[in-house]
Image: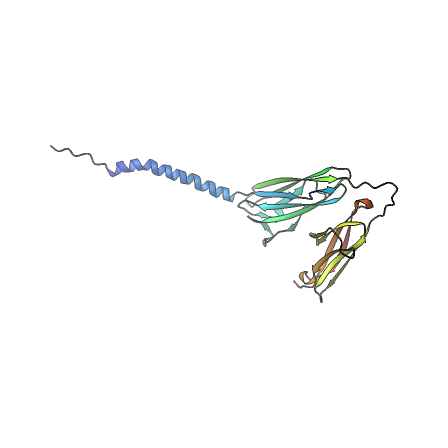
Length: 257
């Protein structure tokens, strides 16, 4: 008599495969949402920059680069940037190639700046930048980064020498026919001059030209046809014992916008 082996039924094969199918599906379900959530999570980063060295008593400028490193945007009004020892509010000075100025979007980096008047006799200035923001869903994120500037003492003045105080004044000019504009700082005992156009840092001049002037050159055709304010922060030679000062001049642009 011949014996026939039992035939494996379809239901039996399915019962064997179901645990494997279920395990694979669970693995995919666990992995997919995690990566999607990670990509959509809001996140910020901040990097603080400042002078590598400075003289105690100088006015210093610090820069904060704030980047949206997450997956959601932040309205500009919901982004707060502060410096731990800033004496002026940290304000946006550059948005790079970002055209959507109303929102800090994923991948965007905005640059903020503030100023600090250092104290004579101090040996360092420790600045911590902090960025905080809240996205449309109400999720709040923040980031911090510190930078320390060593401060040197002013040069010692030899007793018996006559001290000559520093002086400075600024003049501005613009010519639509020539397409040029600019500001010129002249005076005595000037160490360097930092120029701001409408509140935005545009140039720091560390040495005078052949005529002894600290000059900012601009294109008048690159300026809109309105009044623009040039602010110059002038720092004098330490030996002059002259406090730094800020000068202001106005320019007129030539381009209708």
